[in-house]
Each structure stands twice: as structure tokens, then as C-alpha cells.
Length: 157
Image 1 (cartoon, rainbow, N blue to C red):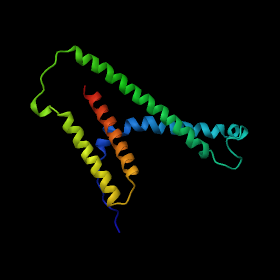
Image 2: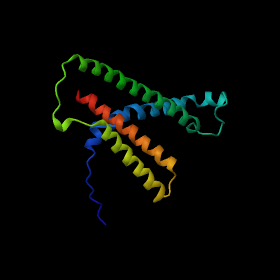
Image 3: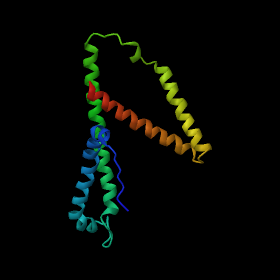
């Protein structure tokens, strides 16, 4: 049987998502793994690991801490840049927006809430998941979408 010929393009991911995430998540995780190889005797000595346990037992927690630190740094830099661009924008005279760029914020918020409630309702009634899980997942999706949208806006300003 010949190999499958599957063509897929990841160019949108390479452009916007993967380079940032790779540097913020993969590098701290790799650094902790290398550090753990050399620190294993010390961790056994202080009682964080038993003699026969692998480093990944405690290394996972340490790696999550470094990733959280990188995420906090990332969000802080985004907020800092956004603040300065916001201040610069208000120093310039306001230009009227074309009709197609105007957004009614009330309608947008109602639209997002309506579809979020629809997804949670569908998940709980049709798929049998808990409402709590649906709300939690929807909030994560909204948060990540907002973060990616803000990054795109900051790049285009």
C-alpha cells in the first residue's frame, strides 16, 4: 500500500501562534528537564524524590511553575505595550471610522453571551457534560481568543 499523500499547511500557525508559544513553553520545560538531570541527587538528598523515582515526578511541577512565570511575563509585556500604544493613540486627533468598522459593543457582548449559553446548553443536554465544565471551557476559549486577538492588534499597530 503506498503512503498517504496528505497536504496540509500550517503557515497561519507558524506566523502567529507557534513561535511565541514555543519560546514561552518549550524552552522553560526543556531547561527544567536538563536542570533536573543534574539536580536529581540533590532532590533525593532533600527528600523531594525517592531513590527509585524518576525526576519527572517533581520536574513536572517545577516546569509548570516556569511556564506560569513565562506566561505572567508574556501577559505583562502585552499589557505594557498596549498601555503605551493606547496613550499614544489618544494624543493623535480622532479620525472618523468608516461604517463597516463601527461595532455596537452591546450587540457584540449579547452575541457572545448568547452563543456561549447555547454551547453550554448543547453540551449539557445533548452531550451529557456538566454545565460547570461547559462554562469553564467556554471561559478558557474566550480568554485564549482574546489574548490572540490582542497580540494581532498589537502587531498591526
